[in-house]
Length: 415
Ligand SMILES: O=C(O)[C@H]1O[C@H](OP(=O)(O)OP(=O)(O)OC[C@H]2O[C@@H](n3ccc(=O)[nH]c3=O)[C@H](O)[C@@H]2O)[C@H](O)[C@@H](O)[C@@H]1O
Image (tube, rainbow, N blue to C red):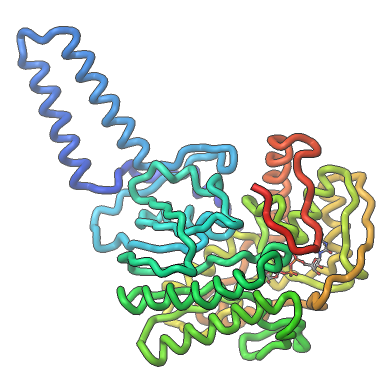
């Protein structure tokens, strides 16, 4: 099983972002030392100043080689020194302060790339990325992708869009604008700078599927007028735009169809099933099943998804690819599992079914296996243990009743 924490604890060779700067700083440092030792009249003031400068430089070098532990990310991650500048890419991640985006940031920062995050912080949270904000390889820009932006980058991971049903239904017009105008803006940028672009599409493009499991060749069953259509149809047209730019302008495109994903840094007010059930179980409050609980979902741990996204971006394959874990649960069974794992006293209760809720979902991952040599490495239970640990820490910070999970109605994420 992959273990992110192990990766995080591996110390890469210490570095700063710009080798030339480091060398010139080191040279200056050496010169200062020489000056101090050769000056017969050196006073303690000069020595103190010099020690302070030296300490400052050393601090900067250290900061430039690692993340800073925070409440959200309480461990240190190390960035390697990439000697040859040509192997360092400038990578743009839209929605990089979100749940999935921030894990992708970690992965790519640890490889040593230069990362630019664009986020409007509607559902993204600064605390998801603040462990990198001091680092010279990292830039964050508060920007709404429905407006164009000029940047010079080599690759674009285009993730920006609220993804939880209550959040994307809160302002459906804005959700549509994000997937349409936002994707057009990112494709325009990709075309101008000749960057490769990866779209985070979704299993929701299959709608309420009548083929099971869902292969990429399935066209889907989506209600164009339902409450989910702002998201589903937005992502469908975003896929169409990707291929139009590929055909017409030779833009290099990649499309990941992401299935239900969970893990640390999910928004506690996300309203999706994993965060809701875990928080409800930890608080010993009612676990809320919408409908009869016989609907199914297949859950993947976020580390597997990030691995898949990076593999897809760097592969030669430009067809759509399902990225998900085929481990399928009924929602009723999932609630029982979480209750058991957390030794919770919660009662499982049944609320009305939500409109257009897909009755079954399971990824056919034949393409990912064949084209990317990718398959999930995390067992759902192992991933859930990490998520429980994370939400426990969030609840400890917020106080017992500090967090109230979001219900099925359209709602704005709480800060
Ligand atoms: O990950 C995916 O493939 C897509 O599906 C999700 O939508 P959904 O599967 O409906 O995700 P949840 O909101 O987590 O709901 C899963 C199931 O649990 C149920 N649920 C949810 C929350 C809850 O408190 N109780 C409950 O029974 C829902 O009705 C649904 O049947 C999200 O909309 C998208 O982010 C994503 O693209």
